[in-house]
Image (cartoon, rainbow, N blue to C red):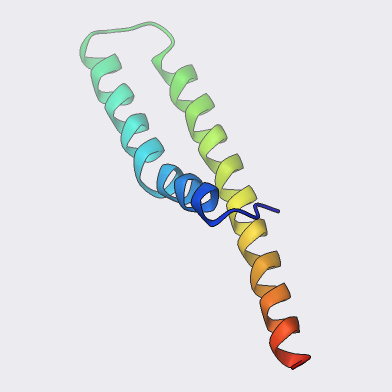
Length: 74
């Protein structure tokens, strides 16, 4: 679980904004300049983005679950 809000927010920003934008940029520029293996790079980047998104989602779910448990125990 990601316990630091700052780390969580950075990962969330990366997953929702930066990495998808980077993926599109590399895809377009790679095809325009006929770079080899552009598709492999995009697949790898998208898999990494999905991995980070899953970690952030699981972390958020655990955090929310713990917050709800604390409120119920009050």
